[in-house]
Image (cartoon, rainbow over the protein chains, first blue to last red):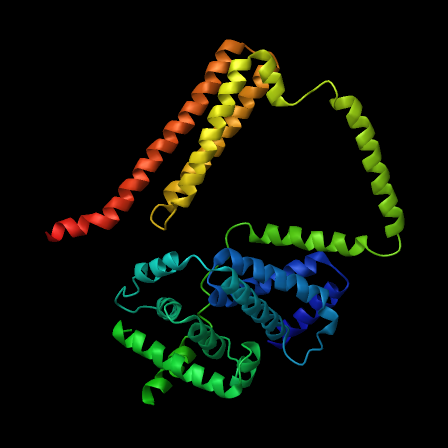
Length: 185
Length: 186
């Protein structure tokens, strides 16, 4: 573990000097996690890729502001999360049509593929169920339960008050629980 | 309350297994080119920008000057075709108008059920359009004008037939969605 972190430190040093191969190594190490984080917020794969890559680029340009109070992964993830929320809001503003296709997706998704197997399948099902929740529920749960942010951080990310954030998450959990019991997860 | 803890426990047990998706193929190359582009952009700024602006202006001026000589003897495609066959140019204009009108109509009919069909149609139309441009080029370069002109007309005819067929299919899909069940109840 400590070996790995010194490894990353060396890579980041090289990135600061603008070494492309070091930057690509950092990309290779984190792209999947960052892509999934973005995807869970914006739901669109092309957009998630765009956000993920954009976040890497901005992380590389402002790498000199990274002081190492948190791990590089956490720092990068925060950039991805902020960018994803920003894109989500922009997309909400633009999207006035599209209701029909949204309804379709909800109807189409047949989650109940019965028998739970590996943790991977289970995780897949949980994610599918979360996609059916309201956007604000899905987002707050993703941030809280998967990305591991606390209430304070989430209220800052989602730009809501601390109290609202607590209520939102507890309602979201309740809603998720109901959905999951209804399909016997 | 207990169930709520269950949810927390469930997510705990699944921790680290949520990152299941991968970006589409070629994402690494796309990133690399974005990275390179960013580097070029950032190294472009700075002290030598004044010099750069002038060199760009000079290049443009040179290009403009040379283009006057290079492109003068070549008027646009349409007028060249009109010279070879005035009727053909008239006909193509008529057809082109008709096709673009129908494409607009088709795009308006797009619904989630018909979207794949319509997108596929537009792709095929694009393909036909590139074929058509090749034919135009051949005609100007002095190929067998009779044969090529008839191929051009056929090309347009194909586009119109395709559009008509797709429109009918789209109508059918709509009808099926709206009416089939109502009739079945009676």
